[in-house]
Image 1: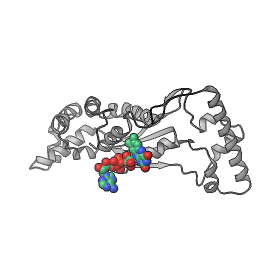
Image 2: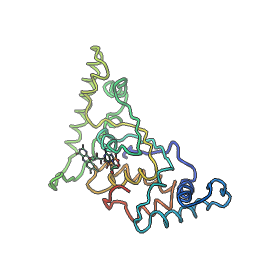
Image 3: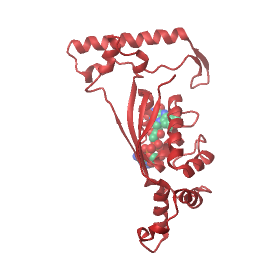
Image 4: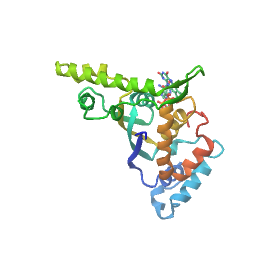
Length: 240
Ligand SMILES: Cc1cc2nc3c(=O)[nH]c(=O)nc-3n(C[C@H](O)[C@H](O)[C@H](O)COP(=O)(O)OP(=O)(O)OC[C@H]3O[C@@H](n4cnc5c(N)ncnc54)[C@H](O)[C@@H]3O)c2cc1C
């Protein structure tokens, strides 16, 4: 069972109502706060913002930048974290750098933690490379790779015991160490991230992250998420 997970640390309450209020201020003569008692409720606000901002690809996405959500993403490989970190506008990340700590690498070397709890290796199975050539990643290859990770941890432990700093020794760690990170974004940048990383040519693990992000998106902002799923998801559209 793969360990990937995404949890929500915090999120703007009533995000669709927040977007509606921002949209309403765009054309209202009055201070929208004053009419709070007449604001549409959350489901109705969702319906209205889809109709007036999103449907027909109007491209009026600014009001969607107000609601914020913060995720804790767990157990994804370093390579995936590195890919999603290229998204800079409206998205913030915090991730362990291995400059100061590397205890779980030592734990693996000492047999206190499972190799696969600390490193990600793709499951056994058929894959295709970037040129479309098919290949099979076998059980035997995978077992050899697990052994390789274990030996690298032992080497890391040796260098740390010889006095190297974590910042120096981290260069010996196999590339796909699992990393947990905190990712914050707004409703618009969340959709942008999904646009670029849920499409078929994105890294497989990034597509998996998007699936897990979408589960929370749907609970947090159902009307916008449904619109997104029907109109943009996996269609390789760019920059909402
Ligand atoms: C499938 C895939 C494969 C990739 N492969 C590689 C790779 O091999 N190597 C690599 O280095 N990167 C790779 N990338 C990353 C890619 O080059 C971009 O860095 C990444 O997608 C972030 O760009 P963004 O448009 O999402 O920008 P974001 O930072 O998320 O910004 C959102 C939007 O704001 C605007 N914007 C942001 N910054 C600027 C700016 N400086 N100037 C003008 N407008 C800006 C653009 O409209 C942009 O689309 C890959 C991305 C994908 C989706």
